[in-house]
Image (cartoon, rainbow, N blue to C red):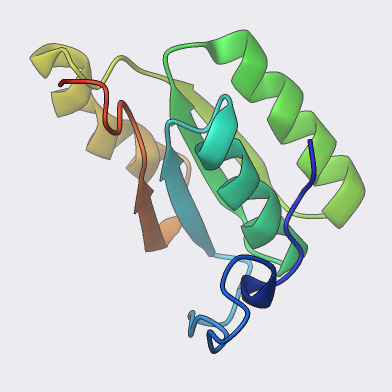
Length: 117
């Protein structure tokens, strides 16, 4: 699998995406991060220096990705196993993120994208 290094790799005429500057207390929350597009976006954000909160049902795959990105980019990558299709785990997600002491400044909601039809 090829990891995208720039927005221009996807859209040659596109301008770079404007994102907040990374800081030690901020993070990007990426849902559906255990594989596919979510994992690619997490890699791109880590490459830009953003801490990550990775969310998906498959906790072992999340942890593997978090370990890889932390080691490769020197960022903080936290994992939260959560099935976002279920109301109770979804309702607890905000408090779980708050316990990490990170402020979410970027949201990439990629969980179960295009799987309902």
